[in-house]
Image (cartoon, rainbow, N blue to C red; front, side):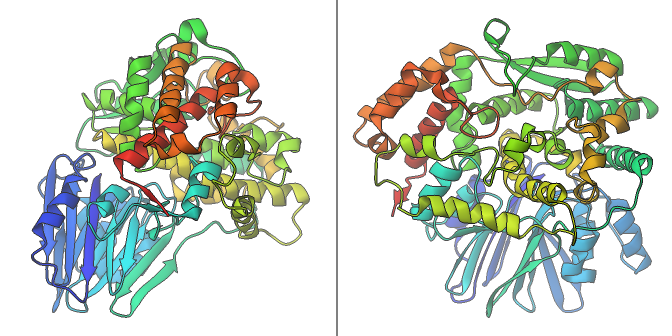
Length: 612
């Protein structure tokens, strides 16, 4: 895994911009601590920072390939999981390879098939290719959106990067927050509209999209989206296909030239991945798999069961670790460290995020990085197999709004009147409706099947993207590559077209996944009720973030402190349990709301954000 960036300008000579390029490279160091490279010409510069995972010698970037009078230059972040299939096809077409890196295979794929190469790739990626003869730039992002890619267009020029901080390191790009940005932060955050970079005029390449850029401007293209197709497999065939797709995806993602481990929470998803990985390691005669879990200081004493988090993970982790014979390590997050890491979590995301859900993951990844460079994690099974409560409670399912953030009342009540535009509610409404309206359906589907497709789309393009962004930013900020096998596009496509009756079985969340794996896992783990990523229940953490919010309110230089409704903040402070449903998802309650406000303050000061 790596970090990429580039700059193309048809009006100005870029060759002598070393100082700016070095600033941009410096912001990429966390994502690529092992090596770096720069390609420069008059019109174009490509930057690369590398985290070495496969073929240290022959995977150096930016990588060049000459065909006739054209020199193609590639900067690439990601991992391909069907490298050998594509390599063999290219060898059959006459291509030769120096090493075994996927970088070389990707570049030759683009040379041979141009944007059509995207249809052949199975992996997580963001990459850019410069054609030095035609003076044309191409850049693209993986189907699911695991790897980030942003850009800023001005005049006859464009700047692109894996992360927004790299764009902002170029003085041409300004950290401006307009009315739409305020709506994103306060009414949708920590989620955000796909394609929207929060900052004014910073755009994002959406999952499954690509761009061409030349003197005539920018051309957008879509090479993949969720498409409704008839499902012709019966129940037994569906279960077998899910099992085969899941296991194949996991096994493909175990390829690495550096140490690899697995996250293990004792939940269904991470248990499946750890089981398949441990079994594969044993078959290859490797050392036992190492697994990791995270918990919090004080949770043994303060953990409270609720409908979202019915039990703690420890019992199930022990069952699974013993079952697969893994070497298990548990990391305990201290409350003070959790709060302090909120700042680095903002630096990792470049915007306010999922607060302690982010900062704990950042600390967790930093701990894992001491011994490993690659890890596998269970994100996205809930979105594609119906794991969340809002898939199963019909009252929530058919509510005409985002299910993880049903009401804007709390969000608006913590701000003074007039902070948000009068049409702020409409801004959110439009985004919800456009996602539903863009959902691919089959003619004649029942009301339930139609809504389930909308729910899949909403979760895929909103909730899941927030979690993927979190996983990528926190892990890569720590120099750790985390792979997500449930994001294999083949599995996503299959799950999208599974009828709800097959997917949910007797109404149980992720029923088909449980059924597909029930012979491979301990029964207690297979049928464990879903429990989300753990959070802290210790009141010490709430006291820390509460004090910071009070400090902000007294700080005349704090933008966020000056726009808060002090009466509502006091009300939440005195009675944190009054939030009936979480601010976002299943985990963001009053302590996390206060931490989110604190993160906004950190972010605006760190990035010198100007509100327009």
